[in-house]
Figure 1 (cartoon, rainbow, N blue to C red):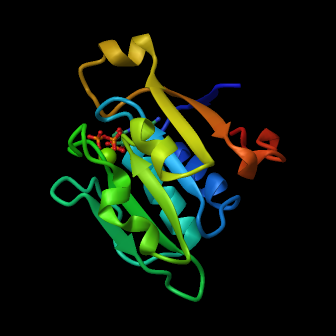
Figure 2: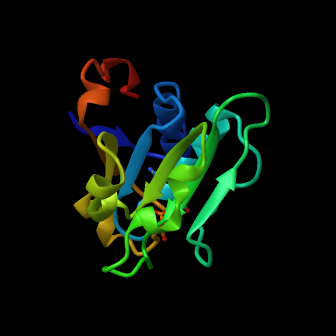
Length: 161
Ligand SMILES: Nc1ncnc2c1ncn2[C@@H]1O[C@H](COP(=O)(O)OP(=O)(O)OP(=O)(O)O)[C@@H](O)[C@H]1O
Ligand SMILES: [Mg+2]
């Protein structure tokens, strides 16, 4: 069931509600065009997890580790956009980071070699919004796809906005 997300604040709230489902080792893949709202989603997720540091598009770094403010899980935030096609996420040795949730922008093609289960968050802009020249405004449609045994009992009915 696609979820309609009309504002950046609502996208952060969606990220926060997904964060509540996550435990260490979980992998979330964010998919969607430039400016879709992937990092905005990540910000809400990070805030709910309670991790340090501002979440931004990691343009010049491939991955950033946000440690927990308390004793909770850390967040490993990856931008796979510039990862060469031949390289693999596993080359970054990210899974050596224990007690962390992994959030990977542009990570779809790498997911199956990186993890056995993951959540895909697909963010699309509506046709109307895409015609809008202001990239920051407009409706987003989000589809969440759960892959693998980890999510067998996943119930997303509570997260609709
Ligand atoms: N419904 C919405 N959901 C998410 N973001 C929105 C929404 N409406 C407006 N925005 C704005 O759109 C922009 C989304 O930018 P963001 O950096 O999150 O995208 P991104 O997918 O990470 O892009 P990039 O691929 O360049 O990293 C922000 O400026 C945000 O405030
Ligand atoms: Mg981004």
